[in-house]
Length: 90
Ligand SMILES: [Zn+2]
Image 1 (cartoon, rainbow, N blue to C red):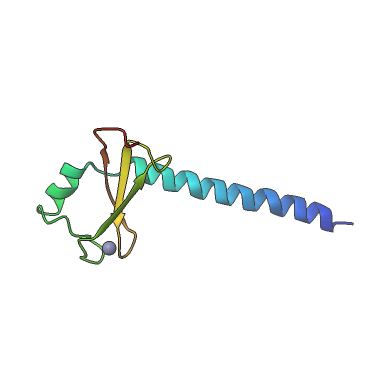
Image 2 (cartoon, rainbow, N blue to C red):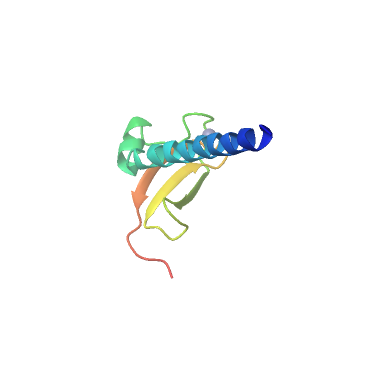
């Protein structure tokens, strides 16, 4: 009898945790430094402060074509900086 109620509550708790985790991740991406500010703090090398690798991967903030680009380390996935793409990509 209590099982449906427990499943109902568990569903909302899990949904809440996943949703707040997603919001925290989006907020962290929006608060990333700009490319110039990041390069200034890294002495111009641009290497990942976590693992030292220079290889990067980028994606859009809201979707893959978003002009606001988020750049992360290709090795350890640490978020590095953001920049605005100049032109739309078709
Ligand atoms: Zn790294």
